[in-house]
Image (tube, rainbow, N blue to C red; front, side):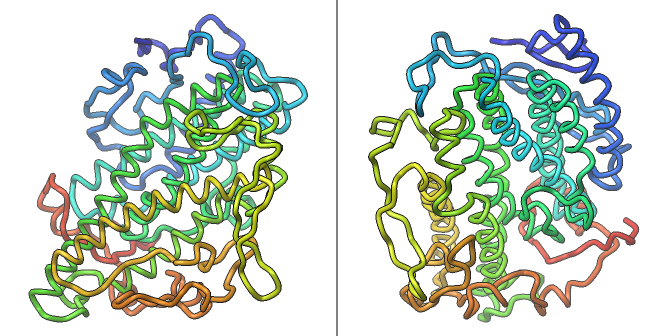
Length: 471
């Protein structure tokens, strides 16, 4: 077990005290991080005690402890998974060689870009969700979102450690940039478009944690295969925390579906908004949007960058070591959906530039398992409706196939909630929705939270908090 020293100003298990230059650099960055947290962290709760989990070691048996702490006093730190003795690079041109403990000079710029892009997503999600504590459905949900927020802050620390420790002045400048960009800012937006979208209420948040955090799981898993061992160890530890974020999304949407179905049966109507629930058609629209923007995070179907990351042994595939091939892919092919004129066709493409699509397919299958569980709840209530992912995985929009040939999706099965005709349009949550309009602005917490309910709320409403509102 690798213990974590909480007597240090920056808790860590990387022997930070032995590297005075790095320690000073991180200690200089720390006050700016805390300033960012006070400005952009959960609004209205900075001075309150919150029950949070903190890492104490990096093995599976004893990595967490729980306690009350004010969020600005939370002990963010630097935690890497245990090193694997004798680990070799599992893929690419350097397959079979010992993993790198220092940055290979020829890959310095590429590796820095990978780390910065991943690091930029971590504070962005905190900024997107900062107002949601004021409309939480229950104390259980409030604790969960704050846990997610502090863990995203710690993930930012993980990426900043890599930048400061291995990239010198360039790394220090990039670390500053991570605190200067803002989600949705017109002048300095976050790097990836999904992290500049609004998360105005809890249904959007739950869909975000199900779909977009699931993309994070796949990106971290690919980086965890890296031949650069410090990055691999960092991502392996981050994955232990990411699982909780996905749990929040899947079980949260399950609770919304459950309550909607109960009210549909009780009142014999599919318009349950007047009873305080969210219609299945509204859920489908938010599913469409978050699924679409999360698919786009994987990049183009055919990508030279993806091929280069792999051949350089910097970023592998999901569960790379479980794949039964040569892990170099120079003569392999992969079937990819392509745009040919006005039609979408599938064709075999070289496997290396098709790596984005390979990982996206793994992601889609994972998402489908969660949606199947939501549909099981609907069927158990005897309701002939089905939430669905687009049968054509690019129908909802993407780098190359956006809005094309909806008819090629194969149509809809019986009872399926319809998509927009162009694959976007009214399927997205930007389009005015009667339920959202009627929900309006609120100035108080949900009844369950006001009563101090510590259990998961079974009632979710599309309550949107205005920035100028008071709690």
